[in-house]
Amino acid sequence: MRIDRALTALALTLVALPAAATAKAAAPVERTAQPRIFRSEGQGTFGGTKIRYAAAVEEFLLPGASIFATSYIRSDIRNDTARPVVFAFNGGPGSASLWLHLGVMGPRRVDFDDERKPRTVAPFATIANPDSPLDIADIVLIDPPGTGYSRVLPGGKVSDFYGVEQDARAMVQVVQQWLRRHGRANSPKFLVSESYGTVRAAVMARMMAGGPTQTGTMDALALNGILLLGQAMNMAGGGGGEDRAYLDILPSLAATACHFGKVAPGCTPEGQVEAARRFIDSGYLAALYAGSRLPADRKEAVAREMAALIGLPEKDILAADLRISGAAFAKLLLADKGRRLGMYDARFTLPLQGAGGDPVADDPAMGQYVPAFVGAWADYATHVLKVGLDIPYEPIAFRDVNGRWDYGLGPGVPPGKNYALDLAAAMNRNPAMRVMVGTGYYDLVTPLGSADYALAHAGVPLERTSFHHYASGHGPYLGVQARTALVRDLRAFLGAAQ
Image 1 (cartoon, rainbow, N blue to C red):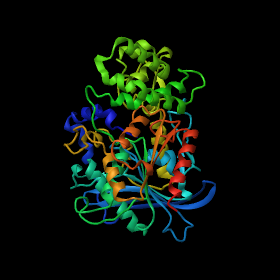
Image 2: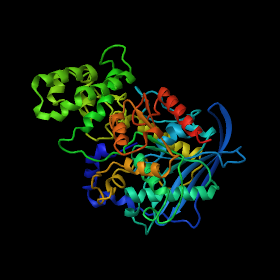
Image 3: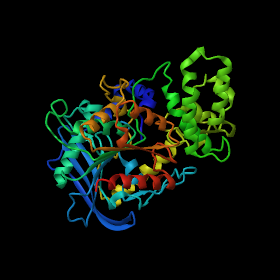
Image 4: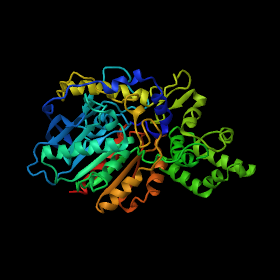
């Protein structure tokens, strides 16, 4: 999940809260002499292959922090040197990895496929996940400090971990420890990231080569590839007069209008995205650039074309000066039915009236699918993974982590950088590294146009970068159709390393 640039205002609000409200961030946990490891075993059919696997919820100790990761390792591989290892994490900042864990990567997933009427009350359950790539790669899901079971230790400083550079450095250290502990330093290595996790992945990739200005040593920890889901790397710009966001989101608005039957019959999400891109190139970009200099007749013509594309009345588009944000669209598209759309996944809806004003808890997507993930994880961790920790599992730490995050200008100060520049530097240093970008058509928070822009304006080698779109939202694995397509592409991406 994510709470990044599109919700910067939320982060600022959280920073302004009284100090007492953030006390939990420093809640002490006892440091143990030896890392704690909870082991279990399982079996399942993945990619059509029946296998056995070893699971372990492992603690990794860093100076000042205790970090937990869950590993799944196929049991019948005699020589695992050529077998890929996938390190996966979510974003926030302040989010644990249970979304990727129980959404697509783990051997079991949350029993949740109905994006129109999701179950929102207990009991929740997990079911076998034949889509997990465990047959072709070992999987490690990492929870950064302050999330999951991971904590800053007594004597440690949250400022050493709650920041872009600090966080990436700690995660690189966890990867290094895991590779040493499991004897896998020479295996193909991949990062699978989501949302703010894509920033983390880009910065980690830049650090992993090492060097005097990076880690101070020549680490030579080369990555074979990175998967970016719901990418959130471009945090540059914004503010008054910034039109890029309206250009970025238009293709997603067009695809969503098609999903709800608000545009011409026979449309497809793919067709709508291409139509939106043509419209941007042929006139929308110039119209926004003209600003108040745009003639009235031209403005009306652009509004008519937009209305046919995104399913809103011309009057609403003109009232917004041709600039329709995701938040405005989410309230307007189904207003005639008294419904509003989810920002994180526009397929989810709730009544237009009655929302409490929270940007996440009241979001029709996050508000409805989060309970299933959190409830299912509690049961899965205890009864399947055999975790015996007397500390709560933190799914998303809004105040304690997100609200304190340091983007390089001090805790809580908004970011201002396109972190795809870090990715470009890593790819420049490693000519064999590849990148796969996966975006949901119905993600109104990190829309597909944002991914296109971020990478095209950072010097990322596009010949080694593939772009994929899925019939889903911010987590492009929710729903059978999206998950099947995503895993097909992921398997091809991982298989290229073998």
